[in-house]
Length: 81
Image 1: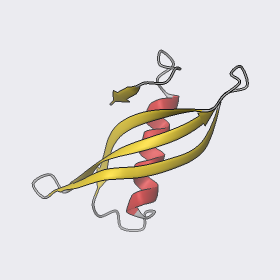
Image 2: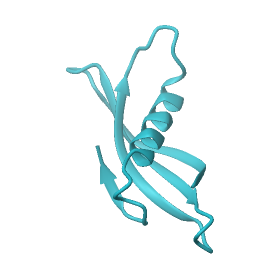
Image 3: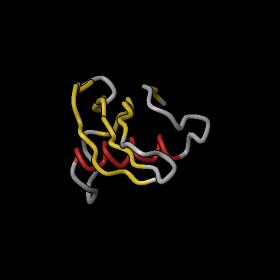
Image 4: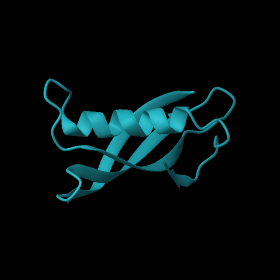
C-alpha cells in the first residue's frame, strides 16, 4: 500500500479543547488493485505543538497513521478514529 497524497479539508478549531478537527482525504495505491482509490479519515491534532511539524502536516500524518493501523478497513469508504 502506498499513500500518494493527503488533502486536508473541513478544518474546525475547537477552542475548548485546543484542538483542530479536520477531514483528510487520502489517495491510496495498492499493488493488488488496478486503480487508485480515496479514503476519507476524520482526525484531530493540537493547535500548538512547540517544536513540532506544521499543523497541516500533523493532521495528514495522523490520518495516515489511523488508516495504516486499521487492517480491517482496506477498501474505499469513510471512517473515523
